[in-house]
Image 1 (tube, rainbow, N blue to C red):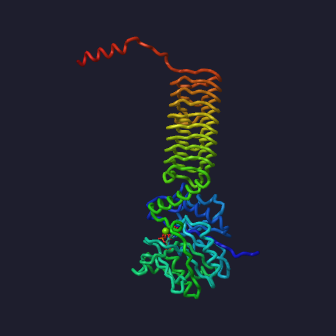
Image 2: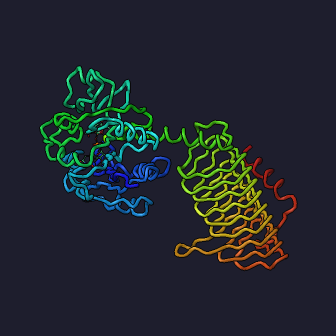
Image 3: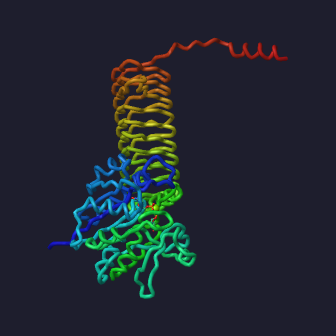
Length: 454
Ligand code: UD1
Ligand code: MG
C-alpha cells in the first residue's frame, strides 16, 4: 500500500540568546542528552519518510551531534535567522516537496523536546479526521502563558489564527491556550503559505504562526489538538531547561522504580537518559548518574555516589561517597566504599576497595583486597600506565603502586609501601625504612617541655 509521505522539519537555527550560551540552545542536555536528540529519538518512533533539521550557518556542532542519529536527518542551513517561518522555508528547500504532493509536513521546534510519540500520533489522527485540513496545531493550556503565542479559536471550535505575545492585545494575552509550535501542514499547501508570509510584526520576523490565518483565508480548516504543558513546554532560558530536566528526571525515576529499583528519596537521585538498572537495586539518596551506566540485579548504591560510563555487577555494593568514572567495571559482589575513585579499571568479582583510594588504569583480580589509602600512580605527566593486581592479592593500607607494575596472585604489599617493581605471586613486598623505637623518649620529651613552660 502506498502511504503519503510524512516529512518532519525540526527548527533548530535560533540563536538561543536567552540561554546566554556559546553552545546552540538545542544542544543543551536534558538528563545528559542534547535536547534535540531527545526529540529525534521520539520522531524515530513515527518513522517519518524524511527528516530535516534546520541549523544556523555557524552550527558545526549541531551537524556533528545529529550525524550518527538513526533517523539520518538532513541538515539544512538557514542563512539568516529571519524567524520560524523563514526557517521552515529553508527546511522545505532541502526536501523534494512540491505543490502537488499529498503528504504531510510535521514541523517541530528543537527547543520543545519533551513531546511523546503518542501526542504526535494524536495530532496526525486529528489531521486525518479534518475536512480540507490546512494546519493542525498542538496547543496546551497553562495558567502562566507568558511569551507563548496564543491560539485564537472560533465559536465553531476551529483554529482561526495564532497571535504572538508581543503582538497580542490585552484580551488575547489573557487567553490560556498556547501554541506549542508543533504543526502538521498539508505538504501541497505549505510552500504557498510560506511564500505569503511577511515580517510586519513586533519582532520584524517571518512568523511561522501566521500560516494559520493564511490557510483559513484560502478556505482551509485549521484545528487545535490539546496536549499538556509538561510535554509541550518550550525551553528558552536556563530556568526552562531546569524545569524540563525535572520533568525528564521524574519520568526516568518512575520508569526505574516500575522496573524494580528502590529509591529512598527519588527526588534526590539524578539519572541519565541511558541509565540501565536491573531488578532489586537500591539507590540511596543523592546518587548522580552520568551517561553510560549499567547496573545488574541486587546492587546497592549508597548515598552520595557519582557514577558515569561504568558497569556494576550483580550484588555489588558501591558507596557511600564513591566515584566511578568512565571505564569502571565493577564485578559481581565487589565492594567499593567511601571516598574511592575508580577510572578505567576492572574490579573483579568479590574484590574490595572500601576506603579512600584511587584505582585508575588497572585490573584487580577476584577477591583481591585494596587497603585504605591505596593509590595507583598511573600518570607520570605524559603517559598513563597500567597496574595489574592478581587474584586474592592483599594491598596494604596506603600503598602507592607506581605503574606500570604487577602484583602477583595472593601477594601482599606492606602498608605504606611505594611499589615500583613487580611483586611475585605469593610474596610479600614491603618498602619502608625499618622502625626505630627509642625507649622512654616520649616521656622524657614531655617532661622537658613541661619544665620549660612552668
Ligand atoms: C515560538 C512560537 C510561539 C510558541 C513557542 C512555543 C513563533 C513565531 N513563535 O516562540 O508561538 O508559543 O515557540 O515554544 O513561531 N528558529 C529557527 N530560526 C529562526 C528562529 C527560530 O530555526 O530564525 C527555531 C529555534 O531554534 C527554536 C524554534 O525555532 O527551536 C522556536 O524559536 P524560538 O525563538 O524559541 O521561538 P519562541 O519565542 O519560543
Ligand atoms: Mg522557544
